[in-house]
Length: 379
Picture 1 (cartoon, rainbow, N blue to C red):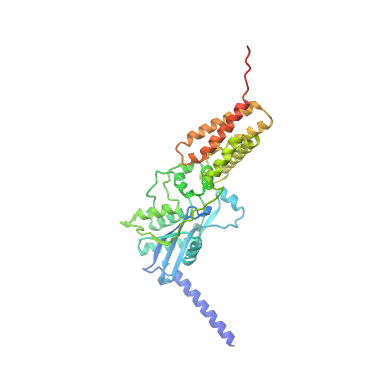
Picture 2 (picture 1 turned 180 degrees about the horizontal axis):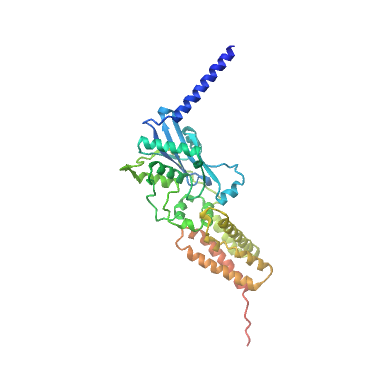
């Protein structure tokens, strides 16, 4: 009997707890509630090279302190890699207790900065309602796009939606290309810089007029005004750590230059063929990704002029010893390299791919000279 009574009391207390908790979640924000944008620092993992953006809702009177995060995705999604490449991988919004959020970034030794939005209680409530609604509606899921739809752009969109005007807009570097904006984020990550330099096409050479990176949003929030005052006049460091600079015996420009120099100095037929085969296969992937993927950043990739699928034909005719077509294809690829060099004159990745341009030109020139049909001289 005592056990039954205790169980009943416990159930009542548990029900009271959940009821009061739900009430506190549904109750309006108090005048002391704060809404702020959290900008998380970069790290050395590929997924963390650009930082992260989230929104914090803090209301001590309602025992509310949560973080809304638009950068969640499910690794267990079927065909995850193919979906990511194709550009139809679904990201979604998630909400976490602020303490859990901070603990995660403390564990990862990543900086966190907070910018409180100076808006009225009514607009804070509007933003809070929109965030809650986004979790319970189809808006919580979105198709990730590197520039147009990501954790930062989604935060910009929901803030502007709540303020009912495009307040948060980019204030600087609007005449700098997306490619140039991205470049500094790859410092001390050489092959990541090389990879993104060659996989991105024409779109990232456009002027970066929209906010798509966390620290771009942080800087813009310092400058934008709303109702005659700065929207986020103060940036508060929540977590700060010394920057860890990665070191690697292979992930650096020296290994890259050494490998290309080895190809030039050794001048071994099989090694040259392997080098050309590698370039052509990468080029085939670029062509495939350009047609297959919904990512506009991968379309119209003029880097195929260096990573040219025509090299496969050249290698085929090399196996059949067809000197005539070997020569023609070598010259055709040399012309493509010249066009490519002209296109790169004002591009951020000129210097990083220049050693490959030189290596390819020398290898192809040697092949062309060797297979050029000699015209007999009749005396």
